[in-house]
Amino acid sequence: MAALERPLLLTQGDPAGIGPELTLQAWLQRDKIGLPPFAVLANPAHLEQVASALGWTVPVASVGVPQIASIFPHALPVIPLKASVSAQAGRPDPTGAASVIESIETAVHLVRNGEASALVTNPIAKHVLYEAGFRHPGHTEFLAALASEDGNSYHPVMMLWSEELAVVPVTVHIPLASVPAALTTELILLTGRIVARELKDRFGIANPRLAFAGLNPHAGENGAMGSEDQVVIAPAVTALQAEGIAAFGPLPADTMFHTRARKAYDAALAMYHDQALIPIKTIAFDEGVNVTLGLPFVRTSPDHGTAFDIAGKGIARPDSLMAAIKLAARLGAKSP
Ligand SMILES: NC(=O)C1=CN([C@@H]2O[C@H](COP(=O)(O)OP(=O)(O)OC[C@H]3O[C@@H](n4cnc5c(N)ncnc54)[C@H](O)[C@@H]3O)[C@@H](O)[C@H]2O)C=CC1
Ligand SMILES: NCC(=O)COP(=O)(O)O
Image (tube, rainbow, N blue to C red; front, side):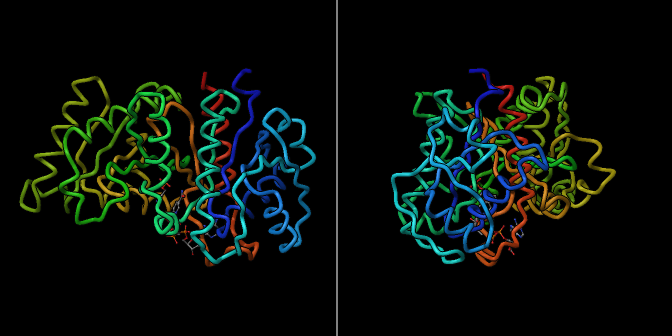
């Protein structure tokens, strides 16, 4: 089946978070914003309970992949999970972990065997999964592990994307104190290559411009405020330039995200999680999309988390999930 004809798959995410109500909202707004057919791998009865508690009319239909496109105009297609789901909104519970993981694993399997075009993950609460024994830092690394079951090795790269700004944290879910040791020229080089390749191949940017942030104040102030900028980051930028990639930096991170500065690059590569995510969540919290580069399939996700503080209240904004669905459709259309 051609990529455009294949549906998208949404994962359940944490059933006690805002994922279920955002999925219902996305289906309700499907015509208004022109969303392509999708199904969610979840528990149909749980979704019906969430809709009913919010007073939303959302017919839910249990389906297999072949029925998704025909059901989608009339009901939210749900591929039922085997694991039970008995979550209460806003009350995280590690006993739901089996359903969270089953949803991701099954969706990846269906995308990898060509039945679906791309994967859109609803947010998971990492600490809740850790309590249940989950050993991966987050989706990003878990998806790479699932992908590597084909015998290849994949280095997953997290990119947070919006029309205004795209950012990549070179190191991701590690303590801040571990960042300097984890940052190596090889890691920065590898990340830069993957970002350049995928901005070109998947996003259609002919010659992507990559701006690298420094690690230290003022990008180290010529070494007076830290050595990593000159010793670790600059050699990676030089090596990327030698490969023909339009890389530049390291730049002082405090002045590279304002409006004029952003016009100089297609993606900013930051050295640690918050250096990358604070600017995009400040500029585009509702529209930002988390997309994993470096995988043999397309995966997007909203930029926010489970938001237990507002789950079940019907006030969570579905914009980021809907942007993730749209971007997955755009990128998935280019997949073989
Ligand atoms: N892709 C994923 O699976 C992600 C998962 N997380 C997980 O989410 C959990 C909670 O993380 P937090 O740091 O609290 O971030 P969060 O994004 O869940 O919430 C931060 C603040 O933003 C608000 N918010 C989030 N999404 C919203 C929406 N759609 N509409 C309106 N308001 C919204 C929340 O109410 C809260 O006040 C953590 O366990 C974290 O691991 C966080 C980011 C991404
Ligand atoms: N802060 C971004 C985030 O936590 C997303 O992680 P992942 O689950 O997509 O790996």
